Amino acid sequence: MATLASLDLYATLGILGAALYVVSYLRVVMNGAAADRLSYFAVNLAAASLVLVSLSQAFNLGAAVIQVFFVVMSIFGISRRLHRLRRLRRLRRPSAPPIRWTRPAVDPTRTPRDRALT
Image 1 (cartoon, helix red, strand yellow):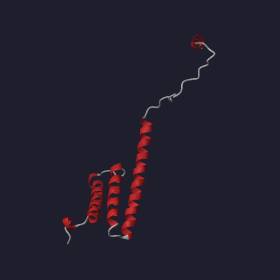
Image 2: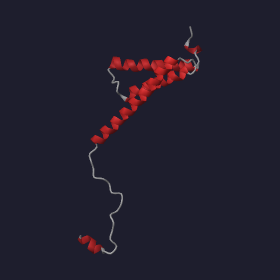
Image 3: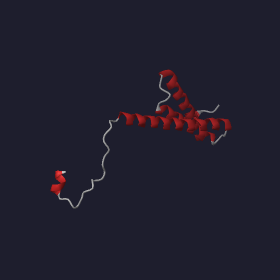
Image 4: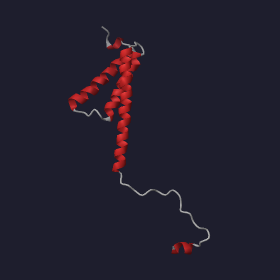
């Protein structure tokens, strides 16, 4: 049986990825952590990426397919969550009048006194 010290870098990364999967799942089951939080998707993305890197040394097509699925779904979940957060921030912000970035046109034929009267 191989010990952790005798494992190469790729096997160690694969074990670390598997540990991240377990920790992520345990957080959801034991603590009631929400599975739609940004941190959940980020941890799953990291875990899938680490396992995918370890598969480059000892390839397994079935495992590679499921890891690619997890990477794609994690990226989708992160982007969806970020979009939702941006939308909520926009809704909470009080609406302000639009900012005018240009000065209004001035009629050069009118004097400052004429402009003040209008």
